[in-house]
Each structure stands twice: as C-alpha cells, then as structure tokens.
Amino acid sequence: MLLFKRTEQISAYLHKQKEMGLSVGFVPTMGALHQGHLSLIERSQKENDITVCSIFVNPRQFNDKKDLEKYPRPVGHDIEMLTLAGNNVLFLPEVDDIYPPGINIGPDVDLTSLTTQLEGAFRPGHFDGVITVVYRLLDIIRPDRLYMGLKDFQQQRIIGEMISKLSLPATLIPCPSLRESDGLAMSSRNVRLSPEWRQKAPLLYETLTLTAEKLRTADPALLKEEAINKLNGAGFRPEYFEIRNQETLMPAIDIQADQKYVILVAAWAGDVRLIDNILV
Ligand code: AMP
View 1 (cartoon, rainbow, N blue to C red):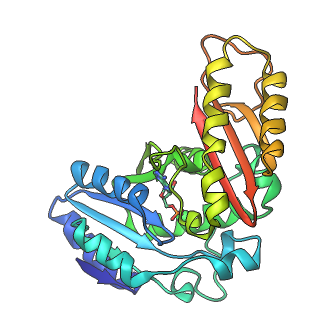
View 2 (cartoon, rainbow, N blue to C red):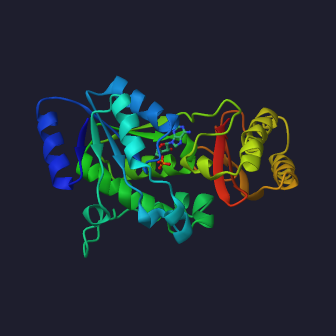
C-alpha cells in the first residue's frame, strides 16, 4: 500500500494514474477502522482500478472539544487493516495540509435546508466542517466514485446534494450499514461503551426496526412517542427520534405509499453519543 502525507504528492500520483485511464474510488474516514469502513473499501475495490482511503480526524466537524480529544486514533492498527484488505493508497494528511492557514477553502453552496436539522440542530457547525473537509478532499483526490456509509444518513444526503448543486465530477455511492451480530451499528465510538451500555446499545436498532414495521399502519407521532419512552425507560438520553422523508429530510406527517422514509435516532448511552437509522 502506498502512503501519502502531502497533498501535492498524492494529487500528482493520482493525476498520473488517471492519465493512464485508471479509475479511482475514494473512501474518506476518521480512522479507528472497523468492518463497516472495510465494506466501503471492498465495494470501491470491485468498482475501481485504484482505491484511496483517507484517515483524517477533522477538527472542524467536532462541536465538542472533549469528543475530539477522546476520538480513538489507532493509526498503526488501521494501517495493518488496510494492508490486509489490499487497499492501494492511504492518505494521511496533517491539519495544516487540509486547512492551509489563511486560505478559505469551503465551497460556496447553500445546503442549510439539510444541515440545520437533526444532527445539525444538536451539533452546531458539525456539517459545515463535514462539507468543507469533503469538498477539500474531493479537490485533492478527484475520484470517479465517492463511497459513504448510510450509517451517517444525513451526512451522505448532504454530500450528495453538494455534489449535485456544484456539478462535481464524482459519483456518490451510498453503502449499507454494517452491524454487530446483535444489531448494533458498527462505529468507532463503540469501543468507548462500558460493558453495561454495550449490552443495552442494540435497543437503538431494535426500536428502529419495530417502528419501521409499524410505519405504514400507525400514526408517526405516536410511534415516535412510543420509541422515545422506550429509550428513556432503558436509561438512554435520546436527543431525537425522527421519521423523515429520505429526499428532503422533512418530517413525515402522513405516511404516503409512494414515498421513501428514514427513521433516525441519536441518543446518549452513558457518556457515548450513538446514532443509527433505518430506511423504510
Ligand atoms: P467515520 O470514520 O466515522 O467518519 O466514517 C467513515 C465512513 O464510514 C463514513 O462514510 C461512514 O458513514 C462509514 N461508516 C461508518 N460506520 C459504518 C458502518 N457501520 N457501516 C458502513 N459504513 C460505515
């Protein structure tokens, strides 16, 4: 596996590969890799000649400084996993390389209808950070295809909208969420769960699944109330449990047979904030 730390070097290398007609798939991550990340890499390997994975813990998307400090950074282990997975190129930039001091690198695009709700309402500035870093990384890597997880449903929806509004040349490929055998969505934050919370954490997905099963026949407002009560009853501190339109992310008031929905949850399991969702 080739490892690049400098933006000019990886850009020059990939430029040459593309001149030779090779296609590039890109998987941006913040590291602490797990099978969920690897599933994106495998998908990219099937569909492209070269797969690039980046590991960059993006300070601008952390609204909570403590969360940034506590974010796991097992880089040596990540490199081993990527090597074993047969990943071709790893991009491991420094903060100053992604954000050259004094230069404003964010895109000029209004995505506020998607960014200010759900995660955006509870993590102010989070999506501005995500949009800026993905825009910057796309400019450096210039991939044919960009692989992102549906685990972060709102994030991939926002990036899809940015690509479409700016007519960027990459195609977004949203990939399904990988789960542990008990249903808990894989996440780099799961290692921080205490044994008790790790045992209780699958309740999030259980609640999403039950709500999804009833969605076409029951009142969404009642389903939402039921779910929040259940999570509170088990000691979670839910921030939101929402039934939204997949496209617009607007609240689902009446369920229409021809519309696609997503049910999203964010809840604190002790001192770890977990998110999950299910498509309906
Ligand atoms: P992160 O390192 O958490 O920023 O995630 C990097 C990418 O991996 C994002 O596109 C995530 O949506 C995706 N991802 C995270 N967890 C999972 C999972 N359990 N299954 C599939 N993709 C995931």
